[in-house]
Length: 95
Image (cartoon, one colour):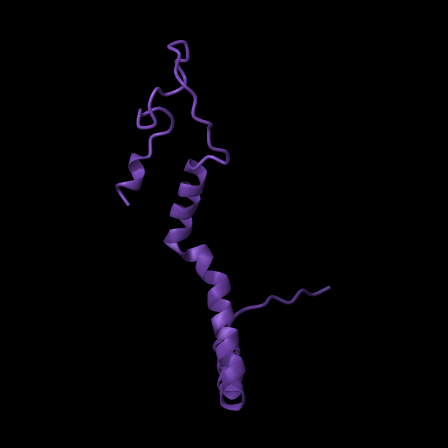
């Protein structure tokens, strides 16, 4: 039994180019909408903003703590909202 290997040749690329040129000449609106759709589907995966959005979403908690009064016996609860406890978010300044 013989297997066929698929290779990209100049003839294949010319055929794809001819198809795209012909489709653009016949239906430019459909081709433009397909191109916009492809860009819209691919752009989130190659955009650097996706990385930073994921980092920001990971840093923001899902539920916000209810403010409590410090009675002096709660070392893990900040006494003031600006007291630096929790995750360090200095990486946001370096964007």
